[in-house]
Length: 242
Image (cartoon, rainbow, N blue to C red; front, side, top):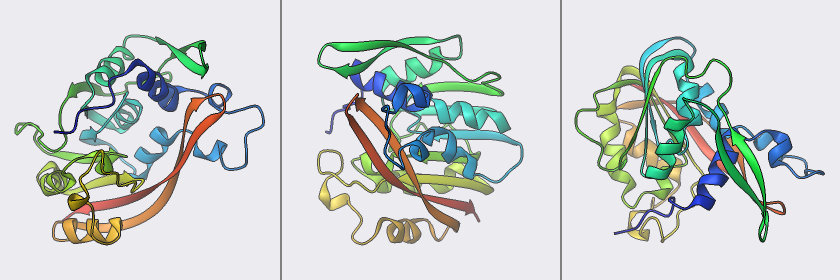
């Protein structure tokens, strides 16, 4: 069984900065071209849903919750689920006020920061829970919107989630998936990787139940230290439930 690597305080701080940090807190003084455009990934991906108000939304692999709260802007009820209990506790705590954390700069040097929600969030009812995206509880019900960003290639058996998705999305509802396609053996055994392209695998797995509306590349930036950053491009696809 693959253990969860997302329970450390260091990764919690990285993800609080990733989801809630401002440009002045994340970027180096002379940021190379392209870095600023990779900010606010957790805000940008929910914007790929069609406009309008809905009843229920689900954010799978919600991490520390920024996309969950963004989904609440246009959803009366939103649920965020993540495998990390540490992440889920932090996401829920942000609904009651700012959350203190320390940004790693180098060695023993750290900077005290506060993660906080933008004014007016959550807009609808929001709940967080710890759960396994491959084995979701059976009484979740169905949703108008399901969002899963940077999750698939961190699952040991991603096909289990794909098989569950038709039952999670209401007819006419929408699904937004994003994955950097960084298939790694420590997360997903190679036997469970797509045989061809990730998008082709998604089309084969979802095509009977979903219409692919569009796909795009969405960059994201994770700051590890003052001098080390992860710049990555995530394959984003938008689907409508038939």
